[in-house]
Image (tube, rainbow, N blue to C red):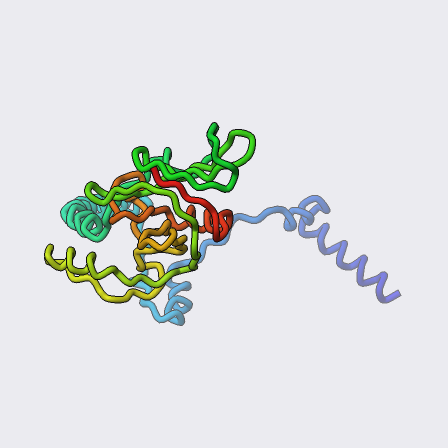
Length: 257
């Protein structure tokens, strides 16, 4: 009863004040925004360690005005770096060109290939053409395996037929006494002995011909293949002499012409 009496009393008071249920619901409608005075926000800014009088945000127009200045500084700085780079570039290129030594390339015609070769020589015979600087390993069915070679320079040419009497891998080199004396007269001093290796003039393999001082051997100067450059020996690229070494046995016939 007391609760019912309380509700009736509250309703009567509201009607007496001229309020209707619709007006009572108006207090739940959207309210206008609350505006806080800068003076009220000042204590919160002080907690962040800034003075309210010094806290100022740049207007969007001011920010846009600052960007072109920064860009202009970047543009002004670029030409100086570009000029410095252009000034040093030729020097760097010159230094690189001095370090690199360009060597002649071998003519592709002197690379190994299978060719037609009609001859009376039996397969396994080695024929060396000192005029065109080719070595032929005769095969069956009118074919031959052809390699480019370096041959004797003018005054050191020779011809003949011999047998392969010995084979050696990475052979040592002992220059003949005649060669040492000949080169000494030119002002060049040859060593009496050079151990086998990549710097050895005989290269990776050697096939010794008869009882002569001549050999079919590799070289540490592959760009000389295809020319008359030796003191009578037959030069081959290291890759090629290794291949020939595995195909030609001791006792094979070698014809130099």
